[in-house]
Image 1 (cartoon, rainbow, N blue to C red):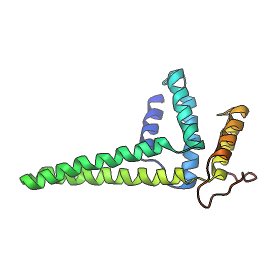
Image 2 (image 1 turned 90 degrees about the horizontal axis):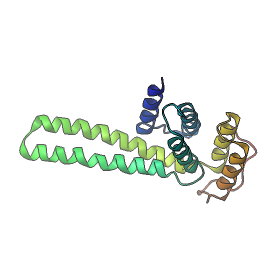
Image 3 (image 1 turned 90 degrees about the vertical axis):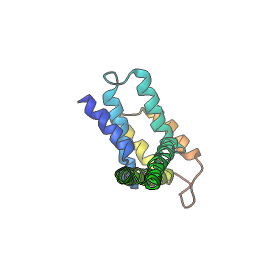
Image 4 (image 1 turned 120 degrees about the horizontal axis):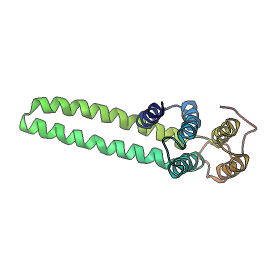
Length: 171
């Protein structure tokens, strides 16, 4: 069961959600999965580091989503190079494999980029709603939630984003 959770988390990071509501829900689910894996599959330090990375992405610039996007984009160049080499040397079976790999990595890179854009564009109200959901599920303490709300409020807003915290828009 725990192995399935780790596999699901891996698949969710390779093929992440790409809509605002799905990204919000995924953040809550990630912390819930981490909590379930705590002690069994994850050491205390691994759990704490992973949890902190998710919370930091929630209240600041989504660095994890950016790294995943850049890594997947970089992987597009490898099958691209294989495809060019196969065409130049007339290795048509390798060229077909190169096209398949290029399409796969291209789709992954596109999805990662879309997720990064959605995570970066979450409004303060969206971020507060995620923090409130985490509190409701007892995934963060009241003190942590207050700190997270403060950090969201201090975060520079994106163009078109409301400046002040809304009065409770839910997830």
